[in-house]
Length: 446
Image 1: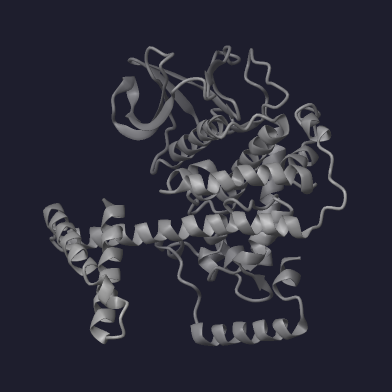
Image 2: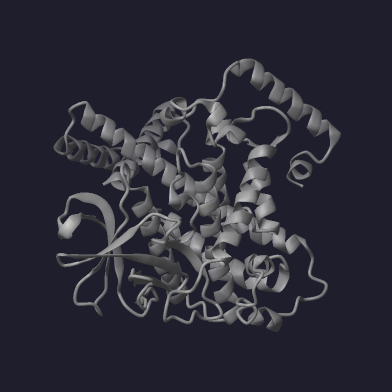
């Protein structure tokens, strides 16, 4: 489908083939991979399928277009960021072996999560879905620190709460529930922890809430890096941000609420699949998550507002949405009642398919705008860091900012000259625009 959408006619197919052939002749080498990949033989590498550089491939637009019709492999909201991460090693073109591997990993992750048991002493709600579990016999250990005491156990994350069960002699004790709803002002942050509560290793996270006298500290021990902790931190934060989103934008209709939950659940499943497929160099969690991703951007409200509008329109128009996909993939009946709100929505007859394309275009335009501005800010930040490395300190940067402000005020007086036909006026107008642009970049960095 993606190939047909990208090349609907034989003429475009021939042009694409010629373009691909020229690119291969110009490259004459593999696309650069990160240093970690260079140290591992490609024959044993789990990214080998992604490095295939022959056969048909598709680009970013086709990948996101398919997500607008069937949000299984990706979602329109973060599809472009996902594609960029998955295809970084193949020149930002997606080949079938990598796409097929990703689909299979998604299926395996869904089956794995369905097999997980509910925490002891807890009855999960019909719309509560287990998203991640660690601390079992088949996974790495998790330790909770309370003062100078340490308790190993099992931690379970759902779309509503975080559960921790202390390991007993033969079984687990009753789970301790940490509610992640918007009812309280709670935060999660990284922490350093070690034996007897000593702050030795940066591999823990702390949950803090006004309802608790002290924070809940969970440590995820590993030998080298802190990728486990970073993943748990990102997933927990994603749940909190999702509930804040529902509260902030007053999303109350049951069908819309469950659609947001479904999109978030599928995004976490995709992250699990990507991490299983790319074990050597795990991707950044935020690139696959929705709310954590845009929480890092300066103008995230632009996308989130369009996201809310798309929820209302998709409920009336699109049959294949995130909630229906999640219900189809779930082999148990636990999501049956959660999907009930979908039945209250009737598809309007006579509605043209062009409406969906228009709504998708509006949302995609907002995402592209925020993405472009974020890239400009990152470039400006990189420039500042480069200047600092060269010996230019913060005081010099402040001085440069003051200079640009004064220059901008001076050149603003020359704007009326730009309206004339003389070259001097046009030159002054150009200098004014240039200086104002540089000033905006400095302010964004600050």
